[in-house]
Figure 1 (spheres, rainbow, N blue to C red):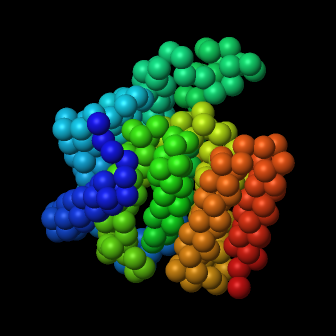
Figure 2 (tube, rainbow, N blue to C red; figure 1 turned 90 degrees about the vertical axis):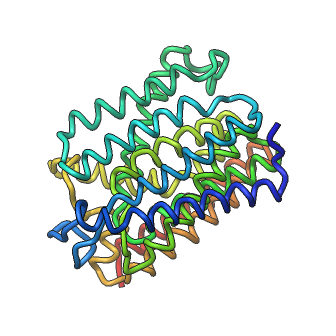
Length: 335
């Protein structure tokens, strides 16, 4: 049985970080020759930069999680479905990085993976048993997973931007696991992704030497969505808070573009964090704001999960919404 003590948690994060950094270091020369992201009118970088660091991030996550599954006993829920789905999306994302796939094919692959992951969840797993029948709940979960995968993909547009979102989310889930709120296996998944992203962060610091690419952002979105589903099972308000910035920036931008008649799945630079850079904020200033907001939302999520009262939930949501509004307003205004 895996013991979720402090030393074991540090070991998992360290192993994942070292392996992720090592794989990215080894892959970088190959990616620089064959997988370059060239700047265009929608880019936030000025020089051609290799992408595909997601191979290293996901390689580390899959390797560490597989080793733990083989040599340690992890209690339910099983990580095998989400790990298999992440491997598939790594391949799909890599193909998209190398040669842009049609939106319909990308969405079909994401939907099939999400469907497989949701259908393989325990039959007794329920989020809202008193409000929704099982079939409708599972269908909404599939839609939610696909939506969140794309939200993470859309918001992977600046150096350290994905790191700034993922670190507070995974750290929050790991702390909730340590407090007995989440299953140990979900805590392990969070710790492994946390370490893998820290390994990537060393190469993605502004100005970035390498990008994640869709080979990283798509499976990372799936892993986070799976983790957040179990956070929601424990305390739905905590799951909303952990993902609140990502959901707000992605959803508000999506509906604004839809209202304006734009092609919502085409590449663009109109997310709040991108508008902030366009209007004068430096990249590190933007990602720092996202990171500190993420830590604030993480703190509120933990407090709400521990308090478990309606008053605490409402207070946490209001303070979280206030923080997100402040950051988005700041981004929209620029300097």
